Length: 140
Image (cartoon, rainbow, N blue to C red; front, side):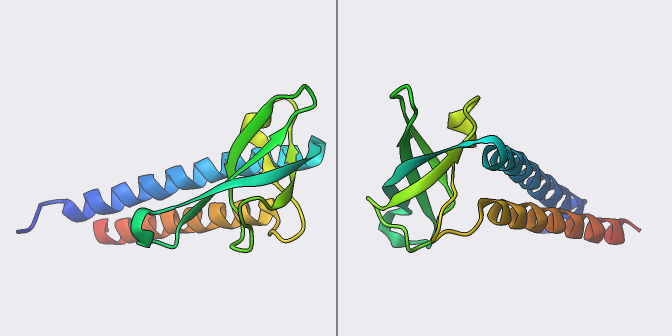
């Protein structure tokens, strides 16, 4: 069964998806840059690692926590290498104006957060541009 215009719909959807992802990661990159430039460093710890149920995927989510000088405890999710385990100490950098949104792991044993998010922005941007080129080629 052929859906008329299905190609356009598919490629349009992929452009929107990867464009949104590139924008999302670009905003996160901006926050990470601000935190690294003007931020405060604190000692944190990896509190949990979540994985897809039944180990059907290699995708893992790493959650970290740290304390602000006023005593509040902040928990956030960030990219991390597989060498990080629950209970491992990490160095956290955050912008004091918005610690919940800008906290990032920035220490030895981990890739640079700027490099990680930069690669995601470039990859998603290139994917969106590639789908746009294919859509343009099929239209013309």
